[in-house]
Image 1: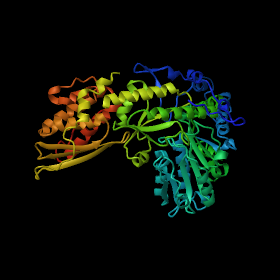
Image 2: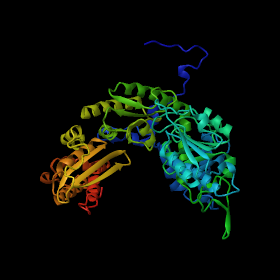
Image 3: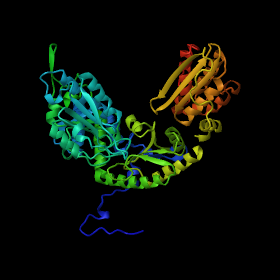
Image 4: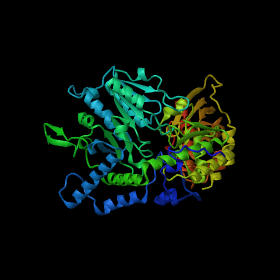
Length: 434
Length: 158
């Protein structure tokens, strides 16, 4: 082995932020489980992450001590619940460096967040006085990509159907990168919104967005980034990203299910007509008509997922405590290790970038001709939990000519030993189906 | 959980060496032919089953598809068990296979009825895989109905 010395004055290897992975693992009760007589090896965090005790405690504590509805009571419990709910909004806003806390809309998940934006466009298109940036009709264009999760495809297909607008998309290269070669043609004066995944849930690709953002600004369109897979794994700064909307979901970032986030620029949220009508989203209601609350309340009709939001706040505290730059670095090391380790498995084909640059810790692969269901089943018998299937990104599978893939995905609690267990498990798969 | 109970030798054998694979035209031009294409939307498995029948006997049950070992082996067993059978008898086998698969491992299969299909007893204990095993059988049901036989087979509780 050769040692490469980093010149003095440059950031040194030991300067990289780190944390004690064993101590982090001790915070996650589920990691102590055994599966089919083997220690749990959880490699499905892109699907949903596990929750640390600190989050579970806050969830239980909220119901045990502070339970009440929010934004409508003068009593003590109502005030406590409201403070906790709004406090969580503040934590989430700070986590993504939102300029204002009112730019954070709580939703059920990323899917709902994207649908809110799509339906706001839809509703605006029916109102002649609506903001022209939000009005769509025949001749207008919506741009997505071939590497989107179904949740960032179907809402736009439906919007195109409702408005007569045209849906277009960026292709994907053989290496699993976004093909930006047609950018100028694809994003043009007719484009109203570009909605792109920040990190692909199937290929692991992290899209560099600056060229696209510049083009979006040039033509006066809007940019939504689906950050479901990036916010949990790397520091995200919405000012730095220069997007108009981002969406992400709590359960992939150590929070509970049932809580997600739509972040949008203040003036855009203010220009958006409501999507869901009901309690809490109104200003005044008469039988003849209603006026609506300012964002974020305008988009949070009905009793929200209060405890879930509060627990998401705890998840944000937890992640911040460990440190997002450290988590990002840990996963980068794991990804490099895993890519090397998987290359030693005969017949294994990786879909997506094969270098640990511009990608996250989510790796999809095929093992010879063995069907992913069979791969997943044998791995499960050894305690290794991976996802198999099309990962709600069927166009990507079609692009690479496979019906499905096997996917291993990592998080802050993943270890290199678990990647070794995956590789050993794949040997077992080869034995059964070889 | 014993992996061998799921991947029995018989299943792996049918998977690696499928019987009667490939869609075929009816040998007798007077036969009625029905075809059905089924997919499992969660995993992308696909199967096409074609039935050629004179209304009394299933002259051929042919198939083509792509998918996991369980779904493909199941199609091979389906072909082997039902080709050449009388329609009534074929649906008795169909019903027995459905009963086995919805039995959560509590149903003891009759080898005289199910032949190699008994190997799927272990699959019934894996709820996530029952759909894989049933995929060709449900496609068969639709294909047969389109060929005019077996209009009201049993609903499956998977």
